[in-house]
Length: 309
Image (cartoon, rainbow, N blue to C red; front, side, top):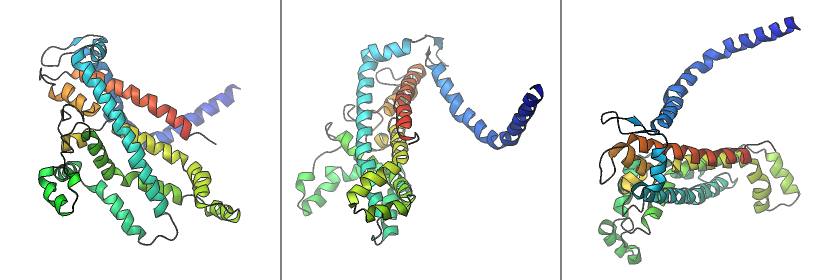
């Protein structure tokens, strides 16, 4: 028994020696750029002040202040609700239309498939600051008003980004327009990976197109649907650039487009009005809570969609 154990141990050590050099660069990159910043952020959330002003250990005071002090609590609640709404629009519009486009692009009788794929994916290649600025001009009634009047679309002339009831919707839809190409291409790849045998069997049984999509395509691409939902969830809860490009870091108008990303920037990096002094500890507390929220959303989705059937 001792000899067998030593053999297994030697084999195990030999296996580690074999594959460790291959994963060492990726492991080092992960530790330096992901694991260490995450642990450092968790540590920083337990301190107040900054390195130049006198940092001191405060325990969970930052978390308590974030939910009890009106200066922080009101802004955080608003940013969290806006971010969740931002995510819901992406889940429904971006991923929903991505599924529709992917279904059309994988149809056998579609002509000009490559052209449509290019048109859908083209916005992804553009810089968000450029697209955000262009859409900001298009949604400005001063710039677009005369053109809309010529098209007899005067009812569309309004300050879309200046109205607190429509600003977040417009920003969300612009973001959906830009990034829709990614879920579309992922759905296309998943649908094309389905064996034709399933469709031939369904054709023999007389199944309709809707039945084929519901009972064959959707169940077989469920892992991809779950992964795209997770990516959308993570990216939206870290969104910052689209609001910064179309509105500003304060989430104008009157914090109507304020997301967790912009709140984190103001508090932890730029310094929030009226203090104007960055509070890295409070910013790290916001980031830590966001990390926990992401875990609560990602882990159940992974278990529900990536499990074996």
